[in-house]
Length: 579
Image (tube, rainbow, N blue to C red; front, side, top):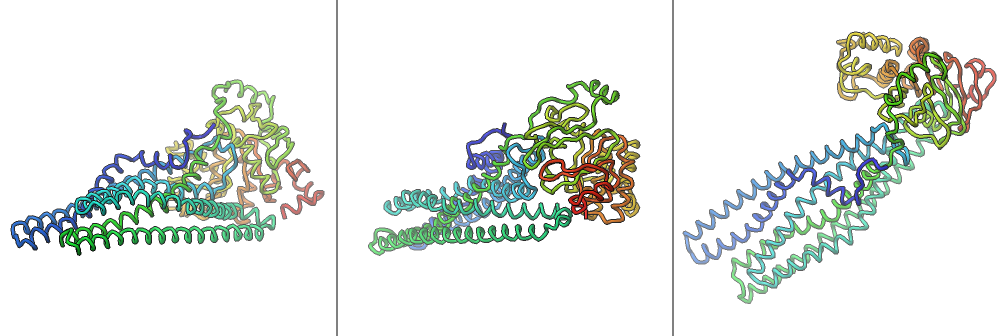
């Protein structure tokens, strides 16, 4: 099932985004139409000033038309300024609303059923792509005003000499259709460039997030080469896109110039023959010069702006309409909480049971974890990432099952998974608010504050608290920029330790922490997780040595099992992985 209502395509998404702020774009369109009509009216009034005031030497007429000219200039200026106000507000609101839709879909606990999207891709879609789609709303303001200017210019020219007006009115639409056809190549280039740029950003984000793991595996060089190759492809595509866009603008500007100059030459010939007056000649030349701008802008808006917006709309739709990895099946509150509590009390089921689990990288993996037990798992980076997502219920396995206290995660509503399993993301994120709010939530009571202190102590964050001006009540600021990467990771670990779920799954929880702090965390972890089943997926000997058991996964399957010391003495793969 798609995550959002199906649309017919990228163009409709752009239209829907613009219509969502029509109360802003409608007055903006009206004001810009007024501005463009005033632009056309200026040479018309100047021509009347010349014919009726100067040529006829009529001072009253000269004064009247001079006053009209001043009024047109005032209306022209204020229409533009007010139009910009409404347009900017409308575009920003459309940008915000679409960004919120993309953020909600990206953060939806039901995940993505087609494929996993890297952080870099999500950031690219939620950033530049959403912005381009929102800016597609410009196509419903400026082109309307520009078409109004072309139509008004055509009417003025018809009133002076009908062949001139007919050439503008009939030639303009044909000209735009030809430009739209020519712009298809540019749209294809824009799509390729945005896709390749997103791919390179995704590689960079993933490499930074998994730097510790890549270093442990000796794969930093390969990751750097992969990023360099992706970045080079994006650079070549960007140059090709800009070259195509430059050609498009150059061709459209040249064609527009030839079209408008031809009309001016015809008007000059008519004036030379005496078919039109001097004032009308000035009007024709002025109107032609004025209409050149709207016609060129029409070409650019219909071509370049539409191409970028359409390419980005495809990427946004690929996210918004992606199927869910899991549907709302059964809420844990509706499967009988008392029944689950009874099984926990009797100990009839292990806290966590993994049976014949399989996925894209894993195959036939089985193990159990009892309450109070800590199990370490050593696996390749791609296997580890998939295992954490499967244990956290964020994706469905292709085979087998994951159960918590006998309850299959596949039957649990996505919004209720946190009641059974805490599996924080590998990246350490902070939330707006105080240190306490980051650990136990906003509005924490005194008991919750006590739990927060215990979790922070287990995560070895107390030395940071001593340095903060208000201790646990210190606001962290935007994105936790007051903390270092290691401090943010310890705070994220404290948040996971404070969560009440019976199963805790950690993925390289100390990857950004120094060795001394890492040892302290390892010493305190077992006591902090004594009442729950804990799985630590990592290659850190400080954590693995304190696990009750360690599982070694190779080629997606269980290859060895034992304590840290046993495996270190008997398993060469394990010794190499944690070296």
